[in-house]
Length: 351
Ligand code: GUN
Image (cartoon, rainbow, N blue to C red; front, side, top):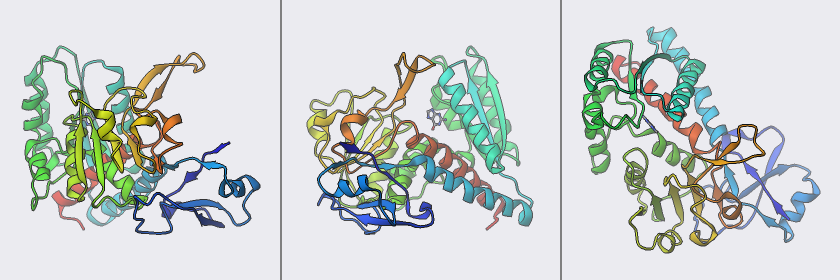
């Protein structure tokens, strides 16, 4: 029997809940003994929890991105209200969507709804698939000059006839809440330099590890994928946290063997269920960035979303794992809101 335990970060424990400890992989030096190694249960634990200690296999802890993101959004709502009352400043995010990709339209819709829910003003421009590069640049320039806009996001990928380097270069770095401007990425890569913004998905991955007190320093981390949006900045961020980082990508000769050495895996390959049991070291912490549709006739939509990591296999081996959905996705959105609020505070000098 496999028991799935849902672990909450420290600030989310409901009243009357205590924690019982279980042993963990020696690979992990747990900074806060209240956390990574702990099991949450009631004061009088139900019998099946007790059996978890008596030989029944305990499944990996779930790194609950949805819950952490909610906490971040709650705090941002309060902060935005304070900014409004004290400084008459309302953060604003401008989003540019080009083309008719359904996934991009959904992401943009989620971002807009999230802005609304915390009190950030959002501005949206939707352009046709065949629009000219100059048209996108015109809107970016307008948003660069607009004092009510503190963050500018151009949803990627762009249609193939658009040169995305020209587009990303055009966003002024003080409003580059995606952190994709080469100056921000360059600063992220250099020690002793601070980017104005860190890309939202990798930032969300590290924040999730931090909230669950997973120690990164000195650990072997493997990043699967080398995209500009996730893989590359995730590897830079992990290095800044003093991990020993290896990047595995589509041309890597022995990805399985390399990944099996990792204490921490961040997977952003975009390949459903690619990381199976044999890729995973027992006790590893797994962050799954993949959101891949797979056919599922039992789902009313005819498909469901799965990650890059085969959850059913991984949860029997790993110390901790992010679910898909409900792991990294909500953290990405929360980091975008946070970057937008940080930007508004920096521009208007309200602290
Ligand atoms: N497409 C996929 N992820 C992202 C993201 O974080 N930002 C933007 N702008 N586009 C994306």
